[in-house]
Image (tube, rainbow, N blue to C red; front, side, top):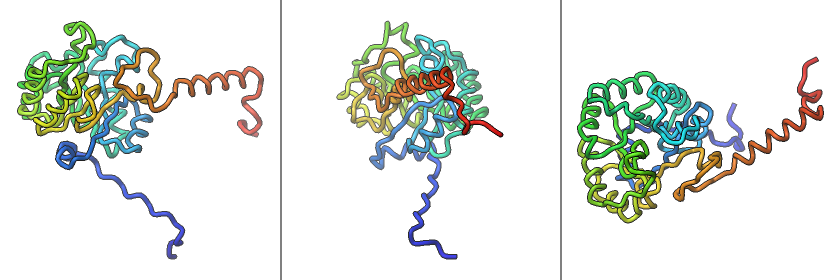
Amino acid sequence: MAKSESTPPQPSKKSRITVPGFSALKQSGHKIAMITAYDYPLARLVDEAGVEGVLVGDSMSMVVQGHENTLPVTLDEMIYHAEMVGRAVNHALVVVDMPFPSYHLGIHKAIENAGRILKETRCQAVKLEGGADQAETIHALVSAGIPVMAHCGLRPQSVHQLGGYRVQRDEKALLHDARSAAEAGAFAMVLECVPSDIAQRITEKVSIPTIGIGAGPDCDGQVLVLHDVLGLASDYMPRFVKQYANLQAEITSAVKNYCTEVRNGQFPGPEHGYS
């Protein structure tokens, strides 16, 4: 039987974004939207919303585990959460942070640890913090068939060395890091807490996509922590974050209403039971 003229068209299934496809978005001028996720239900939702990249970030240490910085999260914990995210995402490129110090223990150990991430999850790439200082490791990982996203500018894993979360303003050093990472084979890089004008010049001078977080509007894309975007962060909100919802208030209100209805006998009602 022929379909009714009023039948809405079925959406076409999106093809999976690959590492080369992600890199090619820079040349096409397509701005890249990337966001973090740490579990199956939220990863599925952000993927369905249309992001090009999902980062299983070591920010999990703070927003999921409640630590004060990213240092405590382990490789096994990253793999555990990345496996959930990998099963949920069908369209976006999924990148997993290599936690401290999983890539500082020599090249062979870095390959082993990154290899575990790819083997034990359905994710396609890893991210590590560093530029020129990690060029040799980046090159070794890429030579082993492991796609790498670099991370220049503010490096949260080096918070103690940096003396806090500070804007990085040394343009010469930043450009050297960015160029070194690109030449070593990184397919993209995060630029964190870099003045907008410096980030713009770096973006113009490297061939791979720059993904900004606190680095202004002229990067090739942006990444934010999902809990910040949804209003689930409970404490300090960085200046570069835009909150698109206030789920903290919504969730608190919903649970309060649930508690009230349980205590006054309103829930469960007859419609919530079986006969």
